[in-house]
Amino acid sequence: MQNRRREMSSGDQIALASLGVAVVAVAATLFNPQFQKWWRGRALRSAPITLGSISPAKPLDIPLSPGVVKADTKTLKDLQEALPSSNIEWLHLNDFGNAFQYKMVEKIESFNWRHKGPQHEFLDPELEKMRLDLRNSTENLIHLANRYTSYVDHDSEFRRIPDQHNDKNDRIFLQKAAEINDAAEDVWEKYRAIVRRARLKLALSDAEVEKEQ
Image (cartoon, rainbow, N blue to C red; front, side):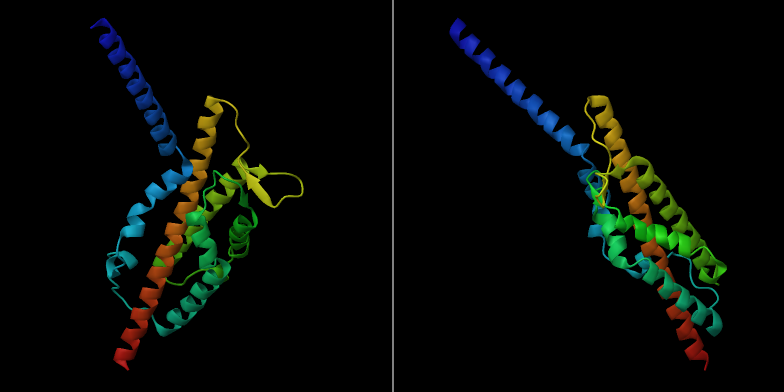
């Protein structure tokens, strides 16, 4: 009987050790920046695209004039050329906890420098506010990427958050990666919002003009 109790005790110890390993593995997964980024974006990936998700709920009260439609269509085209959708999608999919090609961030930095003047502003106040919000988000991303990362070596085009070597610094590393990932996600969301809203607003204004003719 005593031997059986000892065997059961050993089995309990093995089970407890296995449980501890499983808990550590789950915790490591939850704090992994790539997993966190995937988790945050799951709702957007699974949600169906509807008219309500393409544009704000506010209706188009007053159609834009033909002159404004023409000017803002050009502004939208220039914005999309300066920030290609492929570059924006890269921000959404990339995990900044890993090394990354800085030229992808430089394209966003170039957009910020080149799109400061009034010639790049939308005439429609709502679209211009969204553009300014987008620029604020890109500035924040550039700031964090430059502050928290450095080049892998002198001749490299890759940057990364410097390696950490203890538990405290590992937490700091994960925090920095999460901040950059969140900033990148913010740029992605605001870019999609302004492009969708602008396309819808300009198209509806065109339709109203054609209806009146």
